[in-house]
Image (tube, rainbow, N blue to C red; front, side, top):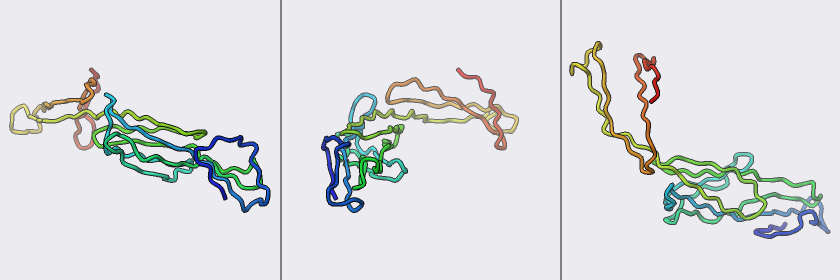
Length: 178
């Protein structure tokens, strides 16, 4: 059994001279991942995980203070001694990056060489200081309700807040988008 890591070679010229099904060649490549915010600053403690084509979890790492994870050695394929046509591929991989208070992002990856994936996560907007007032101040069922709030976004994106009012699990909102 052999493993090739970060090795370029003519894949159609692989031969096993003394074995057929008892020999295996495993071809692997490096994966490096960088996670940053939208201003290109590194994001520490972002979760980066990867699954193979069967959705089996291969790795899950947290980024360091530079926004990177430990280099991953991921399998491209396995080939046994019966020849070129008998390869078992691990690709396509799905790599996900996420962090609390930020969105998440996924990328598909089909390995044929070493790869660097860069993720740029957007911070989630914040709605705070929510105040709900009734028109009479007595909270009667006949009162009109008003809601007041503050909104912010670390990336300075425009934030639109849409309020949906419910009564007994039924929406009362007439949708009028701004």
